[in-house]
Image (cartoon, rainbow over the protein chains, first blue to last red):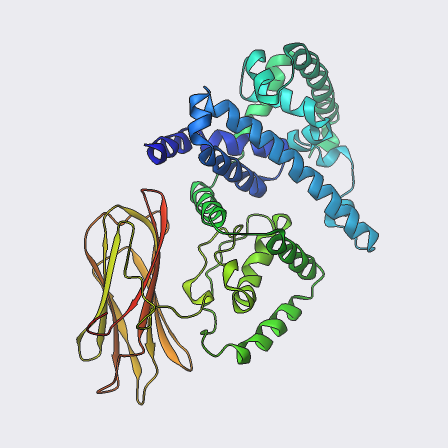
Length: 167
Length: 259
């Protein structure tokens, strides 16, 4: 039965989907919402999705899309407030390495690179699966991942070599 | 080695995050409830507008709007305070939706439950249901009944045919001369009950605790009150449940002998 199958799917994957949204968005509270919204989509299209093969890959793809949209909306909201002369708190945080952690470093990566790096390194998914999730070619996954990994490693190492500002 | 370094860092970042399973289930339930109703962008837009107002510190406007509404809608009871869980993210508009829902409900019935709300919409946000001629005592796998079992004891019986993961029951005892609340009783020990006195009624509110499940069976919820002989004709009950057969069920009825 559909609801039962979906429920099992929820139990198995909700934590990792929320984790994915967390790494991509950098926002723990929004992560649960984004993952839940993606799971709602999975539920809506369950019959088709489960028939087509891997519901988990489908769900990850939706999380990636919803998170990208969410980030865009965040940007718009912040620009809107800035126009009103009300700089959000985010603008008030000094953009120095001291506040750089993995999350903020990830946020500096272009979105496509970020998703590739996260799916490959945090979730250990094979390149082929990442390509399916994002709807891009394996070649693109390879190049995006290697550029992203390089950039992220540099950002993080900058932080490590400067322990004074690290914490 | 770069690879191991990144893997290690990303995994420990991932470990920092603890997903809130209940919040996710609630949001999915709310999404699903919203999906079955006509919902337009207007709800979202109204939500965003209110979010902006809240951000700008004009929360008082909302209060003023709500206060302004109440004289126009004597049938609707004032909203029961929602035990608001910390809103997941103001930027997604939940805070605003939560604050806004009472005034939404006052202006348009179709807005509840709000599609983006993370907590179940409280029953009192809608007009009072359950008066004779306006009842729905059984729906899906849930059966219900209300009866005055003794002087000063109005009892609602719920018979879920499948396990319930959410329950939100309100018994509304209409104010009559000398009416005083005298507590409540329930055969379920995993519900939290509150009694709220309002000008026109006493509301007994039973909520299943988060994470608790009510297995299929028969349960009673009793509102107790004093005040001598009184007429229960105008008393009503209304319950929202979420059943594990993944359905949101809404029942409402009254305590009249014939239902």
